Length: 174
Image (cartoon, rainbow, N blue to C red; front, side):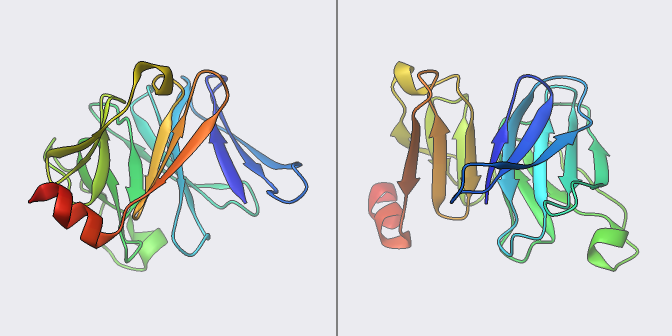
């Protein structure tokens, strides 16, 4: 499966083998600027300039949760355990009925996020350190982070996939 975010306020789930659109996820009131699958592929998270993050079931297309924020996020990545979302502004804990706990959603205040991230669609970052500069022709088409992978959508329609190993990141930081 492949997910795409769109300025038409939708997220689309595609069959990577056939190229067919399997689901159209609707609910955001502004364009969607980031989308990511959970590591086990059971959830999709999307972020929009409407200052919400939505959690979806990619098979049914049902929105399982809407997280309202005081700010919008540019990039999303599920935490390794799937209990939170690392965003361009901090880590958001997921809610009770998604995670079988009674804890409410607690959006963090803007902060540095550990792991890979994106800053202003200009830099791939980790732990607040710029790792890789993205040239102008690779900006403005959206980007997503999942674990050690970064997908960058270019306005030309090209998608660039970048993979980083822990050793590579450690070397860049030293």
